[in-house]
Length: 125
Image 1 (spheres, one colour):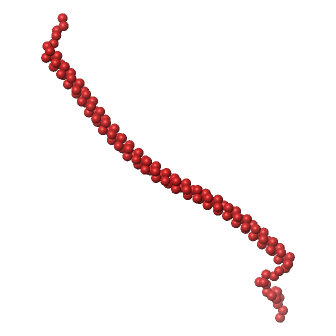
Image 2 (cartoon, one colour; image 1 turned 180 degrees about the horizontal axis):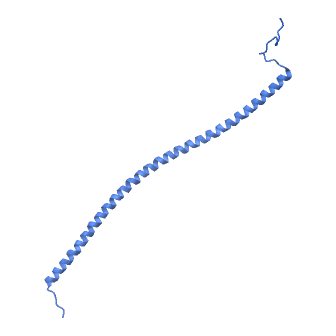
Image 3 (tube, rainbow, N blue to C red; image 1 turned 30 degrees about the vertical axis):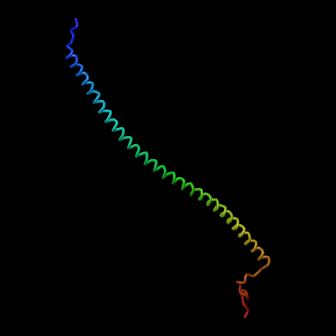
């Protein structure tokens, strides 16, 4: 035969069981609260880091746009300078050819330059 507990013993045991469960739940709640506070601190740190990264990203985008614009200007200036250099090279070649032609023509015509001594090397006395 099964011995039955007195109802007061049953309620005492039940109260003890509920108190143990309440301690377990309280402990879990404190642990969850502590974990929540840690997560909140991590989230705030990550949010500050993200804001700093976004600000740095915006600065880098502006710098990239500025440098891209400068690069386009320098590329255009480089093309202009290359064309000018080519033109000057052609003019230099034309000048050298013209001077050679003038020298040849002066020899043919035996034109004096005006810097010679009017009496030649042996002036008569």
